[in-house]
Length: 391
View 1 (cartoon, helix red, strand yellow):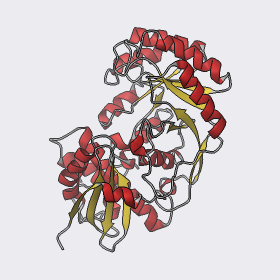
View 2 (cartoon, rainbow, N blue to C red):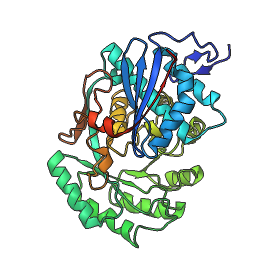
View 3 (cartoon, one colour):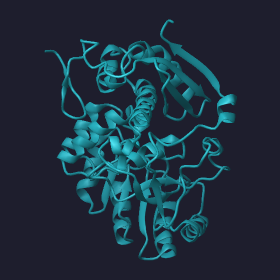
């Protein structure tokens, strides 16, 4: 048999289309999109529906890819063929390897997981082998255009209002080649945030590919001196050897992987290993099935998984369900603290807000699927497209 291995390790024959087509067949794929965010609805022959999301940013382009390069392979297939299709589509679209195909595949994958959860009457976390419940979250700042004093002030306010006890700030400049956002900012913010938040707070920092190895190692030692525990993407993420050099030189946990969508690259990252903690992004990587493959690789290498989820679209909710199911989940969930003035598009998306923080924790409910409904007013304002099987 010619086949592929799925996330669970089972071998599937991707040429025999009907073998895994158990359950109702998918007859319709719809997208509702703006340039920044796009939701996906799958509908089966018996009228059941599931909601997912393509990756944020240029989502209107991603939805075009979904209708052009995902829909032809999935319409008419059974709901239980998801794992087979996730393996098949990159092969059938092998002339177009890259981020847009994976970002589109994530929309289909996450919509089918919601559908499966509704069909079973269970949250996705339970389908993945976990259960509903709480997760510790860290308050994740996205800003570099902020002084250490102003950053500390808002983190302290969030600590008082929402009970966060873990916080992430930014250093360097994004892909900055050792430039800082302004001279001396990194050296200033590291000790200032520690002093302001106190010794009990867990502190993380993100360089967003900002440094060469020598500069990253120097910053890393400063972080160690001030008790930080997580140093994210210190070097250009595509330069695996540079990141590995930093990881080997430091005691602080070096983390990364959010940008990586290629499973072969993930084998290199985990096989070396390049980092101490892996951070796949469900939306960039191609959905839950492919992220579970990375998580399984990490489990075999005894590496914790703290996924990247840097906004309050559905990516954070997907990650919450995933982390409730991972035996080697990291210590906390990333949780964006940016308000409407910074990320206005991530608000008023849902009928009921799934992101309530209490005592620094968020909760995965036992509602079926993802447990959300997209706000009808948002859907009415979006750009709409449909692909369906002929009637």
